[in-house]
Image (spheres, rainbow, N blue to C red):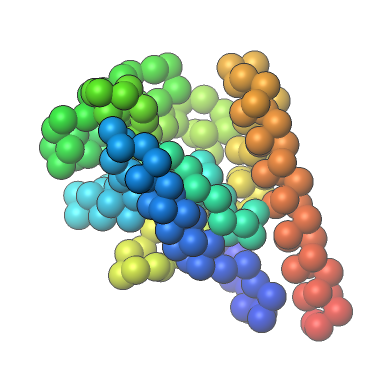
Length: 196
């Protein structure tokens, strides 16, 4: 993490994450067979187990995007040596969720709807194996957690945008996120140059 002086225009991940969670919770009544597990739920479980993780996906990028958006599930990445332990910890807390082991992640799914409740990404391929060494620490709601730093956020978004394993809708959403991240952070960089 690069130590830089905070500016009034600095992107506030905590604020965007709280707004994103509020949006997701507000949409829950529209889906009666689905229970939303907030990223705070997932982060508390991993924190209690002293498992080092980074929040990725829509919730992890919302601050860099400077845009709150609901996501259906929390997505985290952990180190290679602890990802099985992370999955076991989440499964102990939510034993009714079913595990689906896919090549890139382990998904915890609602048995009735098969919708994803949480995802633990396996750090086995680029750029995911580099995330944990390129993070920023954040504190929110008495939790300390990590998110990808700006360069890694752009790298992950670019990988989603260009990955052959993504459907076109996901690629276009990633392209939108990439543009939002660049625009939001270019405005801050320009303002910092003027003020600095």
